[in-house]
Length: 309
Image (cartoon, rainbow, N blue to C red; front, side, top):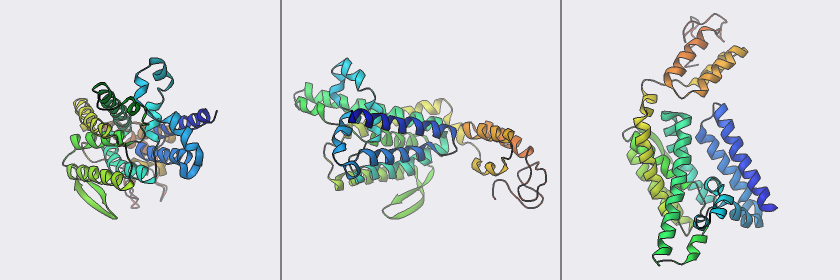
């Protein structure tokens, strides 16, 4: 009963968070970080004591699940829940710090929908990669069957997938990264990704975590590159062409239900041309919040600027 309750709570957090991310102006990456922290507080031993045992049992993935279709069916949820479950503070810190800097950089370029695909698809492939290695070790006689029972947890496979996608799509772009306690602006993506990989590996080493899923990291990163190539062919790079506005600034113009619907259309689209067209439409239907005059462009005669103020 306890394990079922934990599973229901975790699934509700994941589903509710994703629905909220889809309908709100928050970045999906921000929501993913909050979900990971909430679930960490619920299932981690520092917060839940003896509950961590059954929590891991119901949320973690295991390679043995691929052995029996009936078992795989009853544990199918673990392909998702394992990505939101972490062993300790250093484990979750290492994943979230990279997810924030790399994930936000990717989402600002490709949008919420593609970020969702990158995160969950590469996380799934990373899990399959780790399970495949475990089974290969057993079948080759290198390891015993006990390796198939080792719990697989953590968002690192998905995080490495995000890194793979970003470095493939935008290797020469400049992003901000955290180097120890120092924020370093305008670092090339390829250099930042390399440093982040070293940092996360170092954090894992310092934390003393054993049974690290290196195969999940490798396959997640590779999956990000492959999916990035597909996304590029599908035109994801076009989302970055030209200057992008901070469309959340349009919220101050929302005064009527019609305005609200237009604003929701803007925030719900990942297409730059659609966002720009509806932004112009909203501005034309609005009044200056500063002086009350009708707006025809983003700048008012009184000096108010929609995109700056």
